[in-house]
Length: 138
View 1 (cartoon, rainbow, N blue to C red):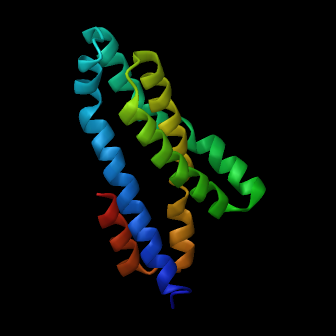
View 2: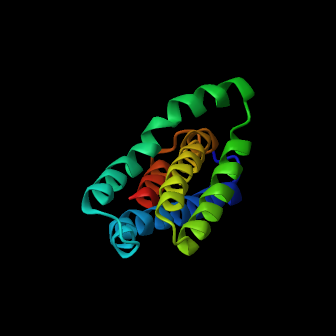
């Protein structure tokens, strides 16, 4: 039995919005860096390191989240951070600031990814609802 149907729907919408922002960033990072006048080697370096930021931070944030026992705080900080960093990325014209903002976006994305654990707990591992979560991610 689901603990809160409204929470399940909000989490699924939240995941959809965060992943749309992520797809937009991944798709247009290289062309935007080219527009900013970056050298091809710098573009390749940033485009390669950028997705790794979402892999670097989760172990540290997960350990910290287990100590705090408050995943909702990490999810809210992650979601607000994703939106704010995306807006800042849209309006930056400086290559260095752009690279730093991508790194910050990766941190907030990692913080937001803890929503998966909360969702699994909320739906009590119901396979049908877990498949909805997976569909929103993909």
